[in-house]
Length: 187
Image 1 (tube, rainbow, N blue to C red):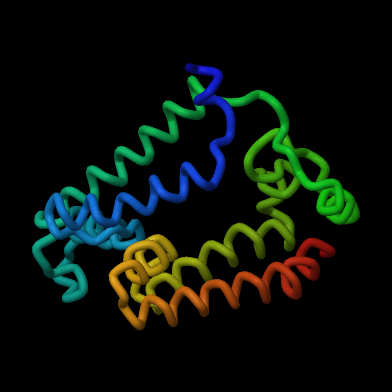
Image 2: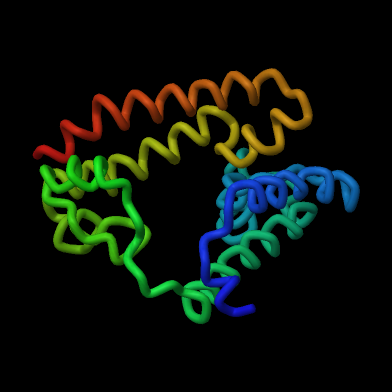
């Protein structure tokens, strides 16, 4: 059983399991799935400071905080007890392309060649980690949610803004992956 859990699960099992969270949350308490609002709830609980954006009943969203804590604990348990020590399998064509940028280490889920403390102090690392993190946060706030909230919950409940946001997320991802990322990796 442990060996089964250590293997990557195919999309036709994990996709429906993720999709089933939407009706489960709706049936269990009319809740919306989403992760990005959690930071707002934490800020409202810890540092309200009279800021109007943080003045709301954050206690009504306690379930979301518990949900995110459960995700974090699940990640810790999985990485501690179920980690597969084999390197991540990468398509040979992609591996050859990444080797041109000096990325050859696939021992972690993120490439250790560019995601480390030493890289953070380089222009390439700062653009990827700090600039990328800022843009993800800005885009999530600007769109009123992240990919999980819009693509999984919003589209499944037929929300038009979620469809537009998801199309924009996908278009942005394709543009960055094909036009911007090669430039940054070549720095």
